[in-house]
Image (cartoon, rainbow, N blue to C red; front, side, top):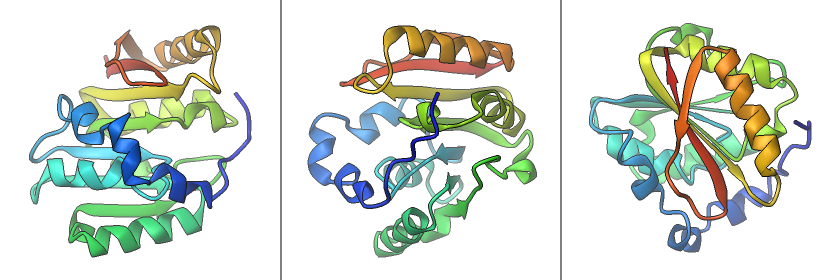
Length: 185
């Protein structure tokens, strides 16, 4: 794990609609998110997954987005408002030490950590906080980029998730990513 944080301006490239050709958020999320789901998007950047997730959860659901960078959150909020989804998204700035989601304890159905775990300085704390926020049986979709995370490094990350109380199973196939589906036991 490292403490290298994706620069805020890369968020514009990551939010590019052309990316959907390789990593379609709706296809990736649909098996895990539906109307009424309460979800968490960790490190959402400018909302590449957050906005489609907000569409999937519908008016009865909620997507909490936490990012370290105020500029990412500001752009996510702008994009959510422009898309008519601001009422479904709770966008928050977190700290380097905590996701600051204690208020969500035991309330979430689903969490997404897409290309973020390798940037976290304390992955044990990351998994502990996510585990605490999920309901029993809640799921975390963990995906890491193959260009940044080796197979062995991903195995270490999955082992940390197990230690935090998750069962680990194979995740969906996502281009250019290593994925696992974690379930709170």
